[in-house]
Length: 470
Image 1 (cartoon, rainbow, N blue to C red):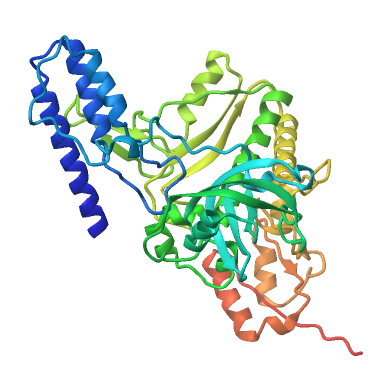
Image 2 (image 1 turned 45 degrees about the vertical axis):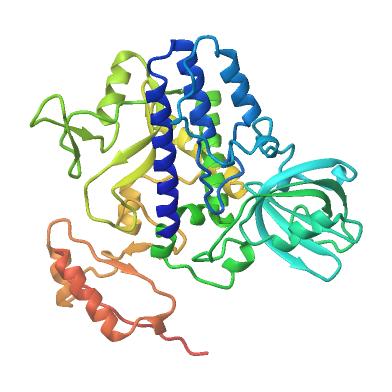
């Protein structure tokens, strides 16, 4: 709170100084006024450093020389400078200020360096994952979205480099220049474990002034379990964690593979449909967005692009897809939340075999790209009637087996009331389900299962066990 208060105070002061300058220049010709306004706003820009911010979050300062040059260029048109012209100590520091804007940049990624890069001069930008001083030689790991690379300051390093190494803390943002060399102690756990960068120059672009709510490093995540509430309260830090970075990459790679199949192999067209639409009756309640232009009216956020893709089919766009955002005002469930993404597909002039072939190709591409798993060239298929007959549902989980078998013929003429009543009813049927491990199913569990079956409007459920002698 104190840091935010000081930042807001600096920003307010800078804006007041800029407005004062603009007011004083209002009576000047347009060229002089615009020159002085631009100069003052740049010179009075406050230093708004955010702990652990990205390398682009640098402070840009205009030098006194450049500001004076702009002023002198329009001196014959402008009025004398008033006492209210505001400058900051940084802007009026003369030779101490940089002569031009500086943009921290890199020429390679940390996770992309390999043994073939040995001897190459590189520049890295990223966050300090961890650092360690071994006495006379210091190491640090620089992390970006591609991975980690180790930097080192050995005995031959300059005093300035050693001094900066001593100031490094986790999640500091740095720029490192140096030469790639082979590592003496190879680390087989990382892709860059064969090389390291001998730092010849290191610059701290941003620091971390307080302890973090949880560790960002991969090694820290193995030692602590982070509560979901803490992660959501510190979402920026959470997204910086390597696991979350991998999740984002996995989603991106999967969607790219799906798009390739749809567009290159099947000729689908990706069409973006509106978000603000009218309310239509679907499976859940709509999220409403009040209209400013029509008081009392409201737009509805789409539960799915159902109406729009049907319009596209009639309009002649007979192969449409979209990675669509959907909104449903309903209670949370294991597979539902208020806002989610779905791959929305609609196609015309095809049969059920064509639809299933497309689905199989999409699943093969998704598993290969996301998990490097090769699915079979053909998937087993079954009819709805077969699924209901053998598994009792239209989306069975085939991993468990446990198919149901109809035993009406075996029970013909039985006097057991439960079975006899079921067989006597129209379309009556008795099915048996074999459970291999009877130890996991006690008598109480079997009775509870029978009560659930009766609540489902069936006759009932009987059970028995068969024991074999060994």
